Image 1 (cartoon, rainbow, N blue to C red):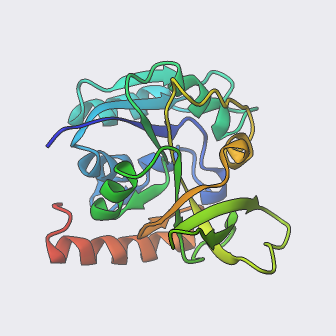
Image 2: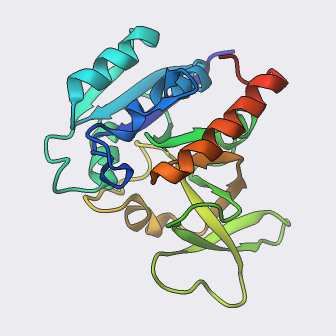
Length: 229
């Protein structure tokens, strides 16, 4: 089944917190580059747009091995802008509703499908698991569904709400949602709240010490036959 959706991989920035001189999407994970694992998960998406910047040619080469039809967009100001600038550029090229994923994230394929089939806009949330998370305050709406109502980074979440971690995942319709930005994506999409918050199983790497947890999680998915290595 081919999904008439555009997957945007934001892979322009350098992974400075990883202590490495390469984008985080080029981090080796269980014998493959992280972006290769992402592309396997995104194989049913009709369109893939990858935003490149730092070491652009290396990222393009890695992606093209698995996805020869990928569209590449360059964020030439990757050193002075945030991921919102990359996503904003990608939205101008997307032909379908967008699922935006950062280049340092692996998502359970089943949960990614649920997010893709949910109302647009939606965001993906998880239980708090990262070392430096962006938090989401959420509540159940009248239908009993979880809804994100606020983002928090460096400030406490709302006391009367559920607290989740934002995974960086967001669905946007480029033809409907005119949000754009140059800083953080959560700042850019605040005006889309409240919106559905979909719980996803995932692993992210911001620091080297998070790599083993991602590899262990991915190995379990391979053993279960959920992901094919």
